[in-house]
Image 1: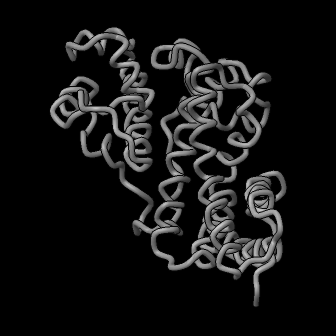
Image 2: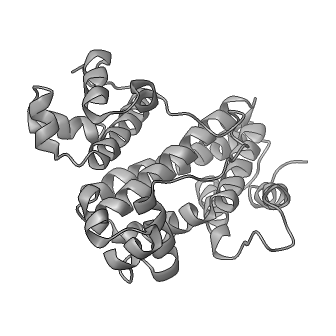
Length: 279
């Protein structure tokens, strides 16, 4: 295994790769200990890899990919939406148990949904779900890992294409609004079911969510420092903006009068008012 990185970008990469490895292991029906033995590492070391606390080198990643029957390139950097842009949202395709869990959690809530509810929506038997997913909690963790990996990847791309705090801020708000409309089901459980996570997944995923908040915080703080935003409470304003966007799945519907793109433009204007942009 490689040395533990210190840069935020490297830590983000470790967490994303670890989440993909964990999901692939569960799909393969293997325990953490079985994978560790096959790869000749300790169970503690493999747990650290899956939780993003230590780096995995390319050689061992290739061995893990072979063991789990996945493409190592997908583990390192999964394919993105059609067109490759952060504004592009291809139809969401999940394996049946995850699709069934997403539908059940949105409709019934995590605690209200049973494995039988999930199996019915997935068109599987209950043993068929349990074969690859030992517990309902594993399905929730996998969905929230997918949610945060997709959102952060898009947000980083949106931020990277902009210049200056105002432009970066508007891109981040647009990204948040587009994600929480186009991916409203994932956004809904991301906002409503964090309380249902068990440790240590709760701490890990909460830290990833905080990264998204910190991106917006940083642009508002910098905008105020430069005098292009004048809110007296930059971090509080940034938190209000993110909360406004993450609440979109509670009311927005694809059958409504406004498209995701229209909502995103409106929310950018709302957000600029919140931070008191100097126009």
